[in-house]
Structures are given as C-alpha cells and as structure tokens.
Figure (cartoon, rainbow, N blue to C red):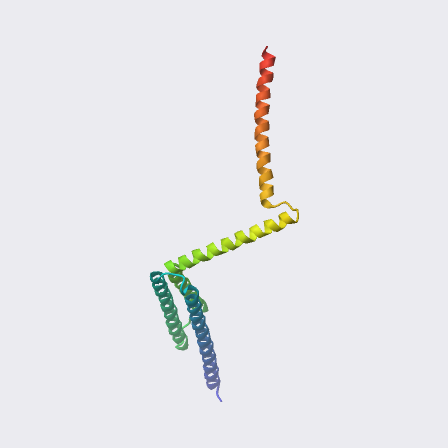
Amino acid sequence: MTDSDTDTNQWNAFVEQWNEQFMDALETNMEAQAQFVESWSEAVEGTIEEDDLSEGVQGYSRAYEAWMDASDQMVERMNDVVEGEDVDLEEFRDIWLNTSNEAFKEVMTTTAFARLTGETVGDVLEAQQQADEAAETTLRTLGFATESDVVEVGDRLVELERRQHAVEQKLDRVLEHLEEQ
C-alpha cells in the first residue's frame, strides 16, 4: 500500500467518524427538541386559552424551523470540510449557540410562555409563603423568636426612640425657659 492510499484511508476514516459524530449529535438534538415540545404540551394542556396555545405552538414551530436551518448550515459546512475547505470548529459551535438564542427567543416571547411563567412564579411564591408561615409557627411553638417578633421589637424600639427624642426636646425647652427666668 502506498502513502497516498494510507492517507486516503485515514482521511476517509476521519470523515466517516466525523459524519457519525455529527449525525449522533443531530439526532440527540432532535430528540431533545421533541422531548421539550412534548413536555411543554403536556404542561400547558388545559391550563391556557386556545389563542395562547395556538400562539405558543407557532412559537415552537418557529423555534423548530430555526433548529432545522441550523442543521442545514451544519451539513453545508461539513460538506465544505469534506471538499477541503478550512472550516474553524468554532463556526460549528457558533451555529448552535446562535440558533439556541433564536429558538429560545421564539418560544419565550409568546403569551403562552409568559402566562405559564407567571403562573409558575405565583405558585412558587405561594408555596414559599406557606413554608414561611409553617416555619414561623414551628419556631413560635418551640419558644424561639420569629422574624415577625424581631420586626415588632424593632418597630417598638424605633417608636420609643422617637418618643424619647420628643421628650428630650420638650425638656430642653423647659430648661431653657427656666434658665431665662
């Protein structure tokens, strides 16, 4: 076997390995996108209005189109590499990063996403309030000072300082008046 045959075989093996890795990455990405859309659909089912759902599906559709465009770009750049063009690996990363930003923007700007995010934040805040109330009840039962107890003591101290200052001012005026006479 000649050196050029060895070089050709090595190049073919390299390109084949790169193609396999690319296809594996593409397949993994597509599966992740499908799982994301499926999870989202299950999460919003019955919780949002039909118009919002329609807009949300359109947003996901635009995001999916962005991913498909990125896949096309990746295939084109891979073909360029196979044809001998010098392609920087960072270009492949940039394609996916830019596409991720675009896809997330398409999804996150929908009314459905905003509504679900608002509901989720509301649920979290409600759960946090319930946990805080339970913790305060437990601390009070155990005889510990709670946050509301400390705030109340602080408020009382501020009021006492205000009153003391007012009394000191009145006393100063009385003393000034007595000294004048």
